[in-house]
Length: 414
Image (cartoon, rainbow, N blue to C red; front, side):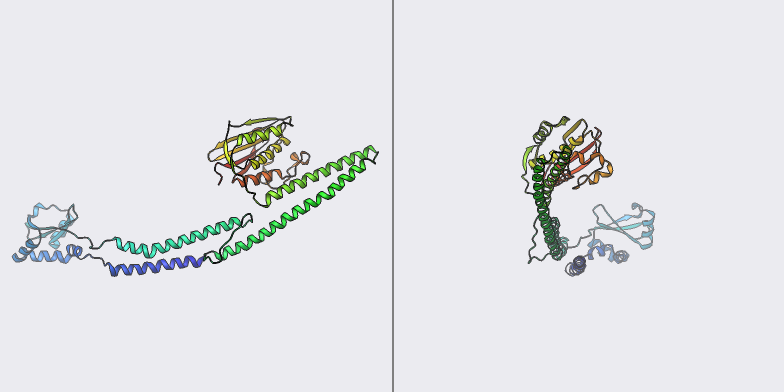
């Protein structure tokens, strides 16, 4: 990278030097007329000529001139002193033309002019066009190529997580070709690790199911041969443990499938209010808690309604587990975001745990212990789905007294 910018700096310096030399040779600064009109020697020559009748006649023949009384010209003290010492002085009128005043004697002045001060005789546009073509255009092209390669580098960095492919043409002359090659190798390594992790998770989870099925069958057979009432309590506890393991395996498989790669989202226009109400009807049917809602009449939004419903189901289901009497679900618009809030009146979550809530397999303090069920994957799945929709998950305290989970969804999903 240092060589790139060093080469650009060197090119700019060399180009400016060469262009400056070319401009000096092709368009020298034509200031002869202006220098003649303002030069001290010209003023001195006018004064010397005015001292002889012949010279005065020549001045009047070549320049517009007239005789003035010394008292007719009112000058500031500094300029009056200059006129007395040098015998001449020049001023500029409103048209930027030079007017010379030559002292003939103590009582008379000779006014010469106005004399037009000519501008350079060449167009000032051409040197700038030359500078633009020699310096500006190559730097613009260099910047465009650099921007193109930065864009490729950005795509490579986005693809390095293995969720999408990144291909760099071997024949392209990219400034960042060594970096993209490294990123491509890194991506292949990450893809290999993700594939291995997915295969390991699936294999282990499926392998768990076989001994669990044998244990369930053995316990069922054992129930027919056990007569001790106390033994039935042990068998029931073992069956609960087996059911819990089966639920854990199912959640691990679900999370592994969602975490391995982003699915092809079916982004369509849908009414979020209808999606939320359908989830609430399903979850509230078997619950004795009060489900309060603060929803608009309708709210159309482009999203994958299946996954959004899944995230709402996880949040509301989580709130129902820990709520004492009520759960509140709100949906509203705020600036450029849609805000979905789910809050309960349960024991809440300690602020020290807020950063870990959406991480997989997070077990919180005893206020939300294992007795309520779950394995710490529901909220992790919510965070994953929301990230697919370019949104964000937040947590705060609820006015009801418990926890308040917030989903921020951008109004425009690219």
